[in-house]
Length: 139
Image 1: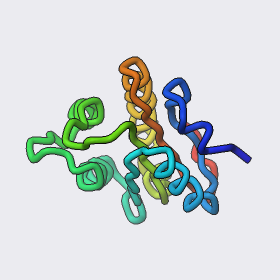
Image 2 (image 1 turned 45 degrees about the vertical axis):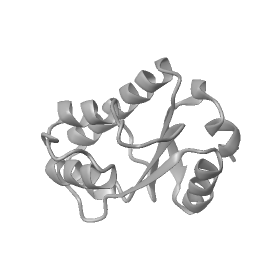
Image 3 (image 1 turned 180 degrees about the horizontal axis):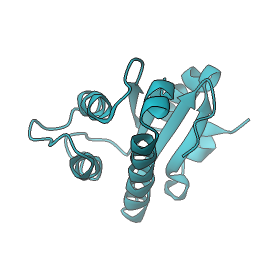
Image 4 (image 1 turned 90 degrees about the horizontal axis):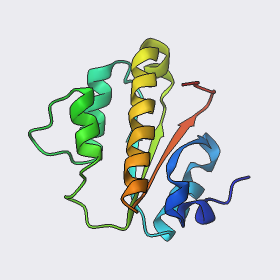
């Protein structure tokens, strides 16, 4: 079992992690306790790129000029200036329909999330993503 509070405490640990579905409440609590802004992206019934991007934009309160494409998604994630926080935790749940129906798009989202975590790490800001699923969804 992973010690989430210790993980969330250090910038060097920023990244994308698998989270057991049953552990989601504990992980969210640990992220909040670590002083991270916590966001919950529920992908239930989302099975394509546009739905994913729209749900992410709503959850993360992207500006109105968000372009609903992968480049704009990455640009917004490497900005997030509209939040005053010491770091970020994005929990993504119910990703099975998206992964099953759009595996290439899921892989792209994961790559961007990993790149964004590396970006924030270089800027000394904690950025974590938890991918929660009932089943394993490989990259």
